[in-house]
Image (cartoon, rainbow, N blue to C red):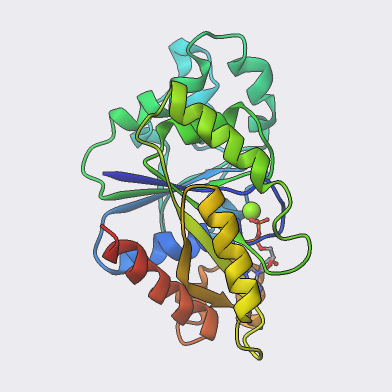
Length: 255
Ligand SMILES: Nc1ncnc2c1ncn2[C@@H]1O[C@H](COP(=O)(O)OP(=O)(O)O)[C@@H](O)[C@H]1O
Ligand SMILES: [Mg+2]
C-alpha cells in the first residue's frame, strides 16, 4: 500500500482538485484506492458527496477519546465517486487534542497500519501547518506538492520543505517528495522555458523534481466542484482531466 499526501499550505492552489483527480484515476485503473479528507473544510468530502453527520469521520479515527476511537475501516464511505474517509469540522480541535498526547502525531500512521487490501491511500490536506498535517506526513510514503506559476504560487514552499525535512529526520526517514506538480496552468501559452527552469531549480533545492506533466486550467474543474463530482467523472475529456490522467501515468511510471 502506498500513501500519497497532497500538500501545500497555500489555500486555493489545487490540492483538493489534485487529490480527488488522482484518487479517482487510480480507482478507475482498478487500484483499490482510498481518499482521506484531512482538511476540516471538507472540500474533498463535498466533491465525493460523502456524509459528515451520523457517520464515522476522520475525527472519530484520530481525535475521539481512546475508548471511542474507531478503526479507519469503520470510517470508510463508498460513494458514487469512490471510497473516502470524510473530514469533519471538529478536526479544528486537532492541535488542542493531539498536542496533549505523546503519541498524538502517530495516530494516522497507526490507523493506516491496520488497513488491509488497499493499493493506494491519497490524502487531501488543509492549508495549514498543524498536527493533522504532521500526522499525514508521518503516515505518508510520498508527497505531491501542487504549485502554480503565478507570482504567489510558490510562497511558503520553504517552510513546507523544512517541515518535511524535520519529519524525515525524526519520524519518517523514508518519506519522499514525489515532486512539484504545476497545476492550473494557462494552456493558451506554452510553458515558458524560464518558468519551467525556475520551478526546476526550486524543486532541486527541495531535493525533488518538477513533474514533466503540467495540468492545464479549464472551467470544467470549477464546474465539477460545483456539481459535487470528481472532475474525472464529470468531464473526462476536459484538458484538465486528460492532464491529470497523464500525470498519474507519470507518477506510476516512476515506480
Ligand atoms: N486545473 C484547473 N483549472 C481550473 N480551475 C481549477 C483547476 N484546479 C483547481 N481549480 C479551481 O481552483 C480552486 C481551488 O482549487 P482547490 O483544488 O480547491 O485548491 P485547494 O484544495 O488547494 O484549496 C477551485 O475553485 C478549483 O475548482
Ligand atoms: Mg482543498
